[in-house]
Length: 150
Ligand SMILES: [Cu+2]
Image (cartoon, rainbow, N blue to C red; front, side):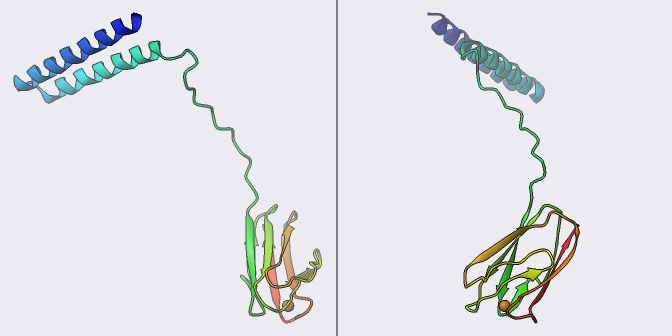
């Protein structure tokens, strides 16, 4: 019953506003008059919709501030080369080496030593301290790489 009344009231407002806007437009009044009219109509409609919707409504949850996430960097081992050979990262970042060669490789430095990586296998390491870390492949010592941690 109350809903029907509201619908009728809204319909009446819409019609009146429409006719009013149309007449204003016809009378070659300022075009802004008709747009202002429709703005009023919008806010009135919103008011009615808000009063008829459920009390809880849909509330925008504030997005919590996330701490800066660690970035994961990929180094491809391909054709007996680390790619990229030198990589700049930030403290806390993770580096993943993935072996794309058919030959096995590994990664050895002062602070880390991977197992043998066969084709398709990967090794990851989190760099928690800043510094410059040179590494090689223990099986092919001419393969060299460097990680620079800010
Ligand atoms: Cu190797």
